[in-house]
Length: 349
Image (tube, rainbow, N blue to C red; front, top):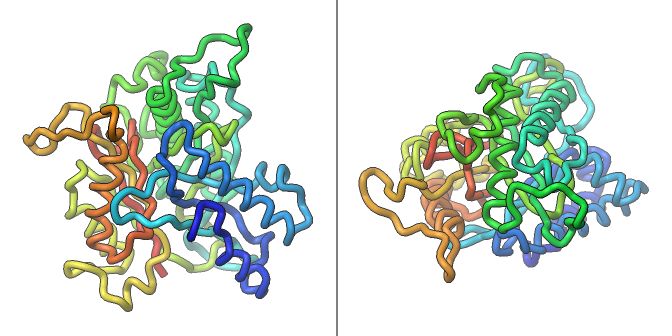
């Protein structure tokens, strides 16, 4: 993208008939904002996307926004490059292949963000997205990508119940955490328990190895995209997902590329890079203050937020293997992989 609303590449595909707008099922991308609560680039892109699709479908932008998840992460620090990936589904027949399903939860008011109601809403939406993809066994789910709402303080009314937090960082973190445990609950990675809400941002032994969550004020409900193995889908792209133990887990990064059929020795060859379709990465600064015994300074300071440190560092690590900066690298991996870690997902032809 040349700027946060640059949809010229998609518009060219639609205009040429290479892709039909009705086939677009989800968008996942990186914009060049600050990645914080006030990052307008995410909403700007979404608005532009829905206006473009409306031109080619005849639907209203509001109707499109209610059925096409647009999962955006702000912040392209370091070598990361603003870009977006279009996930489209064309009619046909198949036996078994990579399946895609989408669903939207019920609207999540500010006082439910980071609470049990959001956990259960996400779990329900994940199950609905699995059904939409034709996936019946949670074990066949490879990855769940969620865009979750964050608390917008200006939208709160005096009569509304108090939210868990109105501070930018915690408001987004609670939303990501609740959505992650919602995914884990739907996939059977955690059990139903009375203290599930209390575990948010406290008990990091409870997490999902298949959840990737972003949050922001540009959405009002939890938008869910599920990828996995499903019946009736033709053979298509390959998806490999691996957990990251920490922000230096280069072996896991290489293992994910290799599992997708893209060996890196030490970097993807040009012919293999041409088959790379999408890379999604989640990570976070380790809250314990060190990585492999060495102190890190990825702190929420006044000059540079910790998540911006993380995106630049982890983005550089993965970009060195991929040979491209067109990577979705998102910070804030609360309950998404082990504490201080995260995950990487690689899509390839």
